[in-house]
View 1 (cartoon, rainbow, N blue to C red):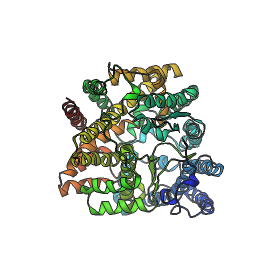
View 2 (view 1 turned 90 degrees about the horizontal axis):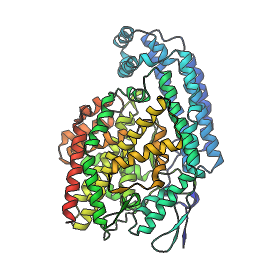
View 3 (view 1 turned 180 degrees about the vertical axis):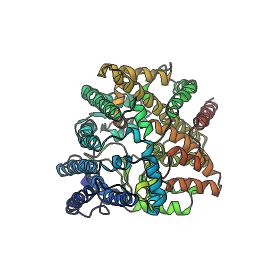
View 4 (view 1 turned 45 degrees about the vertical axis):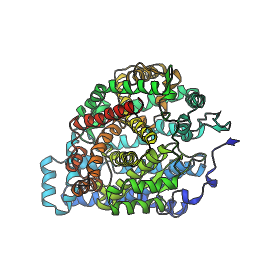
Length: 599
């Protein structure tokens, strides 16, 4: 029997997202494009007028109202493309949305420089004497903090006009992986011919048949290696783009430019890497333990995620996963659970893999819109935890922020965006372990939890170190070609996995699989978010209603304060390495328990 990807038309409607709340039809979307154009013309009239608090307020109000329409236009077109990149009309709409977004940014590029043409004293005076402007106080204070890196109106417009061009490496990457990257077939443990896809990769690598794992590994990375020079060119171009914008805005390095946006001290990034380095010996102990438990003479990269207990099979259908999510997140309260259940049944989620659909999983919400979640759901524990639970965490964060914040604060910084998603994952894992009576299943879950630590605290920090090294190399004038990129990645794989792991050469190209590298210095926040989530999970599962209220207030706060401060208010201080160490101590205790369980 041959198993192939389904066409989108073969997926039942109840498992597809509903884009009608954005626009009932494509015709309505095209009409909205005209509204965006009209809004652009209206906003242009504010240029040169921002001399008073009232004028600034009127401009910001019009701007954020226009942003809502522009955001809907952009999201609708791109969701259409993500659901099936093979549809030419969807690609055309996405391109049109990209162009109108660039025009919008160009036309409104004057706003920030004009506001910042005033002194800090003037701005604070406007805030104090214009009651309506007080809502924008944090926004204006944040702008003043960035004043040294905001350019003239003409230069801001020039940078905005470069936006579409600057997005070319990522856009080309998306087209490459969605429509041109093919992996081929393998024969699974049942003798069936299976097409290897990004969505099936995880389940196939969990197979207890080592031949299936190796064939999957070789076939999957073989697909990337066939296009390796193209991937290297795109990655190098993306880093050059990062350097261009950092230099244009007068930052010393690309890392500084990224961190300054959300007022994150550089020490947070560097301390994260150094603290994880302290616990690498514990990771090496786990790798050695895995090799021993599996009874292997040599542990390869394709052996690192296979379950250690071959007696346990956790098949979890999507409908079962939804029910389990409601049970596991009970400490968040009845209102939260009802809101989440409504979202899962009302067209928020696009569930299954199909031809032309974007790989992986993501969540996206615009200003004033419902959240949208793209999954490529597989009937296993990863489908429950890493896809549904994780992305619904993002969705609930956006849902509560949109419901409680004005548009100016109805988003999240990268630093806080992953916290809610990871809280969902850690709460679910703790719930599953707590209510499992079977010792073998418990060990299976503990190993999965350890894998979550490995994949988030260690692997994402390895990615963060890779980004830091490759950006530094490019900044120092060293060419980023395939051989040097692969060398850096291989050395980090060796460093983070230790002497007991065979680093297979095919995996040197793994960096090309990481889509987030096209959004520079994003991935470290998975690790900081995981550490914060471990702390919040402990707070929530204590049953303390005040701690739950603090967490829910965090979800509702959006970007109304700097991310470090939002987390502090909720009870977690990420300005110190303490939460990182506390999380890694949990990892160490899990390795201890796993070791005892297999003696």
